[in-house]
Amino acid sequence: MGKGIRYSDEFKQEAVNQVVVHGYSVADVAARLDISTKSLYGWMKSFSKPAKQRKEDEDLRVEVARLKRELKRAQQERDILKEAVVDSICQRNTLFN
Image (tube, rainbow, N blue to C red; front, side, top):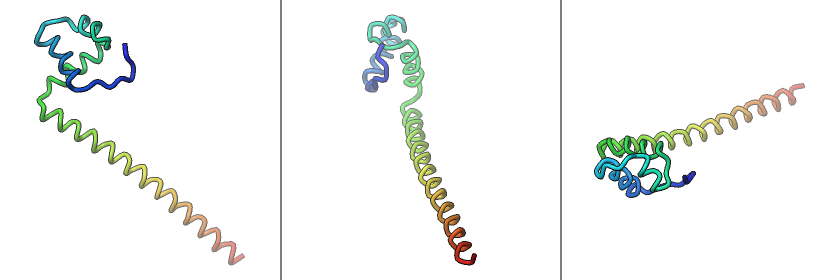
Protein backbone atom coordinates (compact mmCIF):
# COMPACT_ATOMS: atom_id res chain seq x y z
CA MET A 1 0.00 0.00 0.00
CA GLY A 2 1.32 3.42 -0.95
CA LYS A 3 2.35 5.73 1.84
CA GLY A 4 2.29 9.48 1.50
CA ILE A 5 0.72 9.33 -1.95
CA ARG A 6 -1.79 12.03 -2.83
CA TYR A 7 -4.63 10.79 -4.96
CA SER A 8 -6.73 12.98 -7.23
CA ASP A 9 -10.37 13.59 -6.42
CA GLU A 10 -11.28 11.70 -9.58
CA PHE A 11 -9.36 8.63 -8.40
CA LYS A 12 -11.00 8.82 -4.98
CA GLN A 13 -14.47 9.25 -6.49
CA GLU A 14 -13.96 6.28 -8.81
CA ALA A 15 -12.81 4.11 -5.90
CA VAL A 16 -15.88 5.13 -3.90
CA ASN A 17 -18.13 4.46 -6.91
CA GLN A 18 -16.78 0.92 -7.19
CA VAL A 19 -18.07 0.27 -3.68
CA VAL A 20 -21.24 2.35 -3.63
CA VAL A 21 -22.46 2.05 -7.22
CA HIS A 22 -21.01 -1.24 -8.42
CA GLY A 23 -21.32 -3.10 -5.13
CA TYR A 24 -17.73 -4.31 -4.70
CA SER A 25 -16.51 -4.79 -1.15
CA VAL A 26 -14.24 -2.19 0.42
CA ALA A 27 -11.55 -4.83 0.95
CA ASP A 28 -11.64 -5.91 -2.72
CA VAL A 29 -11.47 -2.36 -4.07
CA ALA A 30 -8.70 -1.40 -1.64
CA ALA A 31 -6.64 -4.45 -2.57
CA ARG A 32 -7.17 -3.94 -6.29
CA LEU A 33 -6.17 -0.24 -6.10
CA ASP A 34 -3.37 -0.83 -3.58
CA ILE A 35 -4.83 1.56 -1.02
CA SER A 36 -5.76 1.06 2.62
CA THR A 37 -9.31 0.26 3.59
CA LYS A 38 -9.05 3.13 6.08
CA SER A 39 -8.40 5.56 3.21
CA LEU A 40 -11.30 4.19 1.22
CA TYR A 41 -13.68 4.44 4.18
CA GLY A 42 -12.51 8.02 4.72
CA TRP A 43 -13.14 8.88 1.08
CA MET A 44 -16.58 7.30 1.27
CA LYS A 45 -17.38 9.45 4.29
CA SER A 46 -16.02 12.55 2.61
CA PHE A 47 -17.89 12.01 -0.65
CA SER A 48 -21.13 11.31 1.19
CA LYS A 49 -21.19 15.01 2.14
CA PRO A 50 -22.76 17.40 -0.33
CA ALA A 51 -20.27 19.18 -2.61
CA LYS A 52 -21.08 22.51 -0.96
CA GLN A 53 -20.20 21.11 2.48
CA ARG A 54 -16.92 19.64 1.17
CA LYS A 55 -16.02 23.05 -0.31
CA GLU A 56 -16.82 24.79 2.98
CA ASP A 57 -14.73 22.23 4.88
CA GLU A 58 -11.78 22.79 2.54
CA ASP A 59 -12.16 26.57 2.83
CA LEU A 60 -12.09 26.24 6.62
CA ARG A 61 -8.95 24.08 6.50
CA VAL A 62 -7.24 26.67 4.31
CA GLU A 63 -8.30 29.49 6.64
CA VAL A 64 -7.05 27.63 9.73
CA ALA A 65 -3.68 27.04 8.06
CA ARG A 66 -3.45 30.74 7.13
CA LEU A 67 -4.34 31.81 10.67
CA LYS A 68 -1.75 29.44 12.14
CA ARG A 69 0.93 30.98 9.91
CA GLU A 70 -0.21 34.47 10.88
CA LEU A 71 -0.18 33.58 14.59
CA LYS A 72 3.33 32.17 14.32
CA ARG A 73 4.53 35.35 12.62
CA ALA A 74 2.87 37.54 15.28
CA GLN A 75 4.46 35.46 18.06
CA GLN A 76 7.87 35.87 16.45
CA GLU A 77 7.35 39.63 16.20
CA ARG A 78 6.28 39.74 19.85
CA ASP A 79 9.40 37.83 20.91
CA ILE A 80 11.63 40.22 18.94
CA LEU A 81 9.96 43.21 20.59
CA LYS A 82 10.37 41.65 24.04
CA GLU A 83 14.08 41.19 23.41
CA ALA A 84 14.37 44.77 22.17
CA VAL A 85 12.71 46.11 25.33
CA VAL A 86 15.01 44.05 27.57
CA ASP A 87 18.08 45.21 25.61
CA SER A 88 16.90 48.82 25.82
CA ILE A 89 16.37 48.61 29.59
CA CYS A 90 19.77 46.99 30.09
CA GLN A 91 21.49 49.70 28.03
CA ARG A 92 19.71 52.45 29.99
CA ASN A 93 20.74 50.88 33.31
CA THR A 94 24.33 50.61 32.10
CA LEU A 95 24.44 54.33 31.23
CA PHE A 96 23.30 55.40 34.70
CA ASN A 97 25.64 53.12 36.68
